[in-house]
Length: 419
Image 1 (cartoon, one colour):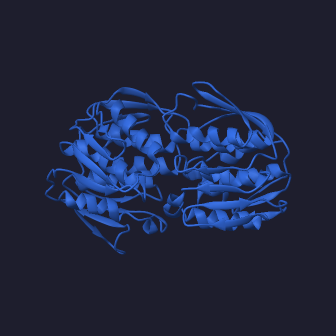
Image 2 (cartoon, rainbow, N blue to C red):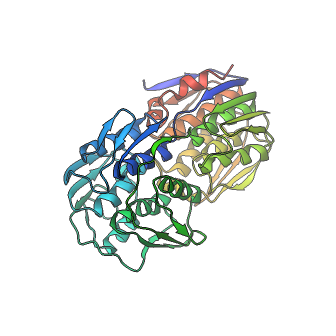
Image 3 (cartoon, helix red, strand yellow):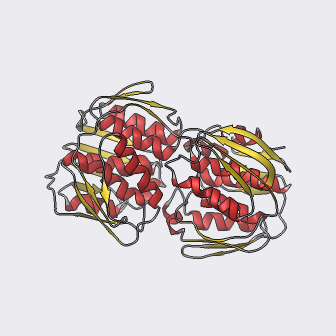
């Protein structure tokens, strides 16, 4: 299917059961694989990003039976492998660190866009520890070749925090395998809630990391210990589309599987919705939202909700004035250059958009009907722009199957709540 046509809609109401969180699923998969003992992961996301992680772990010798993962107690038994990881940063970066600190020959590669996403800061940190990693093509970018190295514990590993939080996540997950150590963060750490997910996931496997206001992290030695059974939360980033639909389409729209007890930072997208004038109700395992367009314009720092911030950008089309989304430079190195892509597609719909180095300023105008939205092979572009139909205009979304990265049934779920 090369496109999907969404008809004009005027109301959104109903409930959606969310798929498992991608961020949590891939962290727990790797931890369960590295742990001592077996773990059952209940509610694990079944999508492209988790599929490539599962396939890679199996190639590395990890035993899996359905939702049960049999850990390898810190050392992958397969010492030579060629691993294709698609465009899954949550698989590529952590596996790079885990494999670089083991004694094997590995090649890690992915789709062309993955080969444009920077990884130099992580590689430099690993090389400082004695890892042997070479770039197969362009310096600073995948594909990577990893060789056995002489890993030594340094007084502190240093990594930049202002490009991608996944570099720090990768080091945090890998250090317990080689006796632990300290990580110093250079510069401002972005996307802190994603590091919080990493720390909570490690804690569930028996490794409790201390930190000083996100500036340094004291990582104890392993081993990771399997907790027998873990429940994967619903995806808070995916929740944002349905909650936003409730905010402009009357509602209420309820999402189930994530709520006030969530470990995910994107659950704070509810703060954005409330600032825009929507009514939000939360329980431990669900969130409901109701509201009506036009919503209030906002000027907000959205660094703490970088994925859900894309939903806010599309909601700005329904606002009563100019909205400014700040501190979102990390969009540049995601599945696509999201700042450029979002600005381009919003302009197609009639909005005036100022694209800065780390911000978007969006002034809505009358929505244009029958616009074709390009999605840049980015699942979040496809999902966020589905909301345009609630402005009472039909919209065409190109390459809708890109949502298979994290939410294969997204458009069926979206249709179920719109009228």
